[in-house]
Image (cartoon, rainbow, N blue to C red; front, side, top):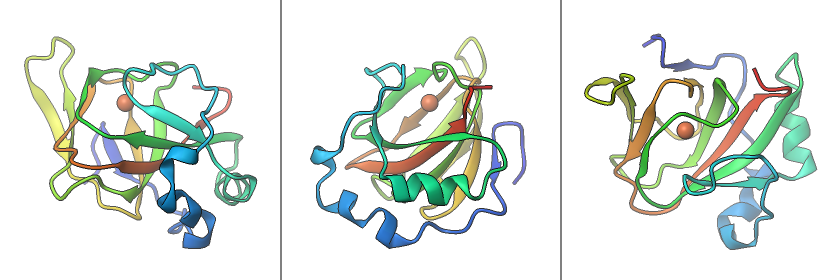
Length: 149
Ligand SMILES: [Fe+2]
């Protein structure tokens, strides 16, 4: 499965449900993150201290931990200010949600995958990518190195 766009992130276990269960009851009450992302693409929110600490304990460099919520198709983009991230899906947002990577001129899909929930993946987010097939809230924990690389 390894390729230049995504791979399993080994060494980080599934996130204990007690660390995010409140989120599932009321996504709307989450506090917005101050990450300088493109807000037209998706929403990012702060996580609780306990979840931040738990995730950090599995990385040997400082990481930023946010929730990411997507409610509809995400058009082709490169992430703002990060090359690499690690994502953990809590809710997939539908049975056939597909992440696709595109070549630079957006004429060809070079890789696609339906990520499984409750697994850690490493993603190349500098390559152009989009997300299709989203029907409901797609909720992930997204992690990246601080300072950004
Ligand atoms: Fe992205």
